Length: 258
Image 1: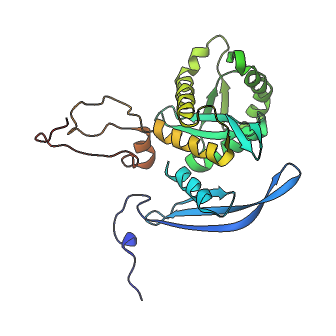
Image 2: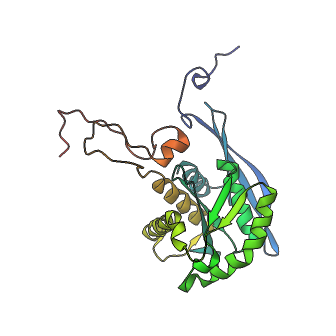
Image 3: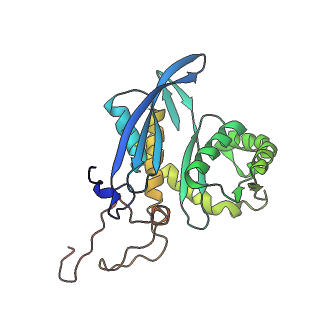
């Protein structure tokens, strides 16, 4: 019998050693036509956890986009553009956020995004959201959509034993915690994309990377002494380790930081 691989015998961090493979094709319905799609699976060898993603084609660019989504608004469809909306879930105890993409402003699209969220993060006890009347100006479309979704969402989520609660229209500041995150997400998207229209895989990838950046922000005091311990971030609480995307360097008192 061959020797066991090192990751089966030693204590490694999650995602230290990954296995990857593709499968498919599967059929994706787009309007009246169908297109082929492939799946890609990333398996963490130390923990046996898996991560699934979708490929639009079997080429290097498509795989690298999936890999960027793993490690981390308009959508261009061929030569035309279509509207897409973002949905943000914020964990109130840890301040971590989760971003997802909506193809339409209806109950089914939101519930599909909610199912994707619970598959990754687990089912919450309650969801707090702005009542539709808190939206203003250019977000009138969101106001109308949320108003029409409210009864159906509450009914659908109650079947899953999840309480859906809207803030009072007279107290929009109750949602200030996640409204600040929306502003940060928009700033990240503007910095990455500007005003250009991109394909849906690119948009999903950038959303995942913006999510990773915002989940890397410190939750407490940041010492000016580089030798002090790293501040806790939402990513540390989610992954149980230091943020892999940022360099973690400890400087001795003799080293110059200039």
